[in-house]
Amino acid sequence: MLGHDVPFAYCRAPGSELPCRKVFDCWWETFDVTGFIRTHYSPDQIARLLAPRPDKLATIAELIERARRDAGQPPPAASAGWVDSVHFRGAHLRADLT
Image (tube, rainbow, N blue to C red; front, side):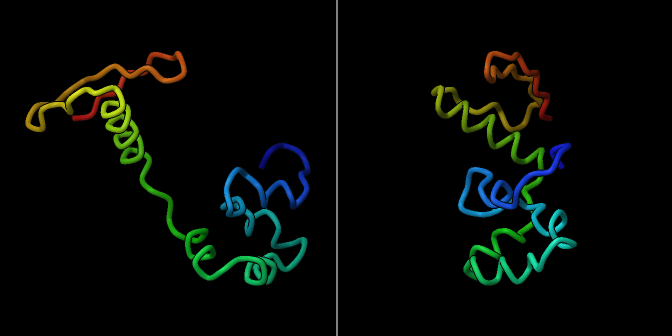
């Protein structure tokens, strides 16, 4: 919810080929959104839309590893807990992944 009314077109174009994951929750009372999705999207696209989202911690760890690879840094030792500083859009974030 964005705090105000938005057109359905906004929900269909959140920056990818698929509509927003909340499209069913937001529009089910207004019209047959399920029928619309079945008509306008392929079974593969619908499966991706309905697939569970990845775990947030796993996503953060993956982003940290990708940033390390892009910067040419080796991964931390697997046996030791580690604390690492990560710079993201100018903000200094502290990640403690043990």
